[in-house]
Image (cartoon, rainbow, N blue to C red):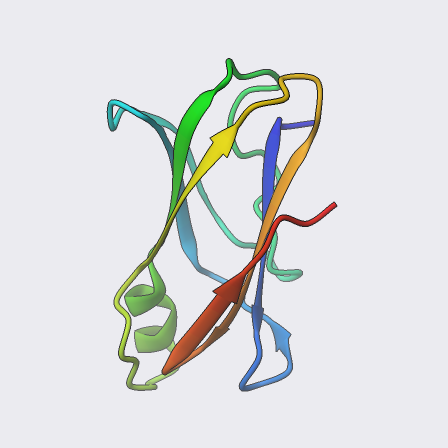
Amino acid sequence: MSHITTHVLDAALGRPATGVPVSLSDETGAVLASGTTDADGRVADLGPDALDAGVYRLVFDTATYFAASGREAFYPRVTIDFSLADTASHYHVPVLLSPFAYSTYRGS
């Protein structure tokens, strides 16, 4: 399993957000992995099984997702920087999304 996973839910529609491009980068900006959310709003394989401690970034291309359904959106992308401190732990970073708001948290 990837060290970092994500799940995107469209809170406005009450269902998983399918087709959201997602990328994972390290602190230098080097892209480590990318993918697109599936029918359950998840990226099946996002990055390596193990990462070093450090700062990482997830970028969600929300403009592509909302454009596909013909909806206007205020945020063209959601960028989440986070610190990976415990190299033995799994990091799950979910996003709750709507056209004019989003929230995130450290999941399990």
